[in-house]
Each structure stands twice: as C-alpha cells, then as structure tokens.
Image 1 (cartoon, rainbow, N blue to C red):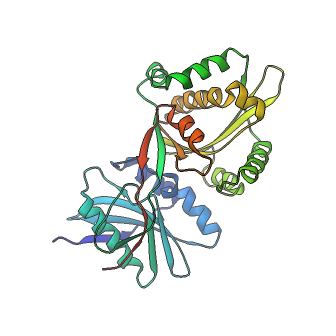
Image 2: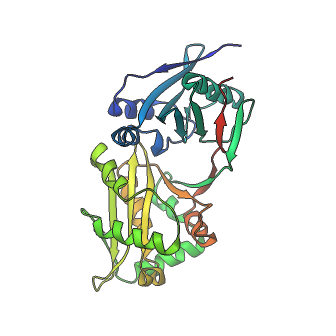
Length: 299
C-alpha cells in the first residue's frame, strides 16, 4: 500500500489562504484551517504547523495544526480533496499523528471517519451550513415558510441596517447575553484579532427600529468563499419583531455580493436548545455532521 507523505509548507498565512482557496476541497474549509487562525494561535504562544499530505505524489489534503507542550490539535481538518476515500482519510490522520509523535494528537475531522487507531473522545457535532445558491430569488424561495413570513413581517416594520465599524457595544451585549444564557463561545477579543490578522474580513452589522432603537446585531468572519457566524445578539424587542431574521437575510445578500457562497451558522447541538436550531435551519441551511473529536494513535 502506498504511504501517505506529510511535508511542512513554508507558506505564510496569506499564501496558505490562497492554497486553500485553490484546492479542490470536498467541503468549504472552516475558519480553523485559515491562516488568520494560525496567526492568532501563534500570538498566544502556540506552535503552528501547516502541512501538505500527498498520496502517490498527488496532493490529497491540507492541514493546519496547533500545538503546545506536546499536545497537538487539528480543528475541522484536514481539508481533503474531493473523492478521497474514508480509508485514506483515516490513514492520513494516522500519518499526521506519526508526524507529531511522541506528542498527543487530537483531531476533529470535517466529516465522519473511523478506523484503526482513531479513538473517539467527544461525540460528533452538527453544523448548519447555508449555501447561498445561484441567485437571490432562489435563496429566498429556499427559506422555510414560517421563517420567510417572519422576515416579510419584519421588512414591513421600517427597520434599517447599520454598518458597525466599531462593534464594541455588540460584543458587550453578546457577552452579557452569553452569561445570562450560560453558553460558551470564543472570547470577545478573537473578533478583533481576526480583523488584525486578515484586514477587511470581519463584517459587523446591526439593525435599528425606525425610532433608532438597537434591535439586533451580528458579527461574521469571512475566509475564502465562506463566512462563519461569529456571534449574534437580539434584544427583547428584536425577538418580538423578527429583527434577527431581517438582519440575517440582509447579511446573506451583502456577503453574497462579496463573493461568499457559504455561511457556517454554527453548532446546532447548542445548549440554547431547539429554538436556535429551528432558526438556523429555517434559512434553508443543511445539517453538516462533523467527525467525532478523537485521539489519533501514531500507528
């Protein structure tokens, strides 16, 4: 059987991003695999390895791995090419584990994979992945009926979208919402760090009532042809009036105009419950199952 080779890329963050976007990937690469994530990790004292995996001299995967004190973590990766078999994906993970031996290698693959030496330690999670479609009319028709009706109702209420060049108020509001509801998310400084690492890649929008009251807000991180829903907030009045439906719809149109073709709306196994799951899937997003988080043995 041909061995999978692992070589370290010498590309900087910008070059790595370009390589990811040029790669014929089976799934849109997640933000954890982009250069900005690695640069943020490096600034925090972590080691970063950007690796190319090949089989019979053909590039089959790219992987950005973060390490500290002998523990290596691969988030939402490797980014595999289309058509790579599950058996070869399992082999690739074991090859990466050998690359970092004798350290511990933990991976959360982008898609389910099982095999010898792959030991699940956290159950697979599910993401809502929203494809923005061939055109806006098709995108709107793909909305769930109730979601679309709530959007139409919000559009009649005179709301307006605001570009939040300084989203400090939104970050603060979401932080308070997080403490109140008891869910976990990336630290608020991550948004600022992402913008510094990849200027122009953060989109922060709010929505106000016709009286100027802040109703809702959202922060999106862009990476390649995809964007990730970083955080969102909705006040009591915003929840009553469907402000977040209105906001998310406007965000989708704005991102689509910038060339974004997918929005990762995040986890639908959230502690916030079934209501948030229905809201995300009401956009017409598909359920995307990740692989389990696993310990990979170097065998």
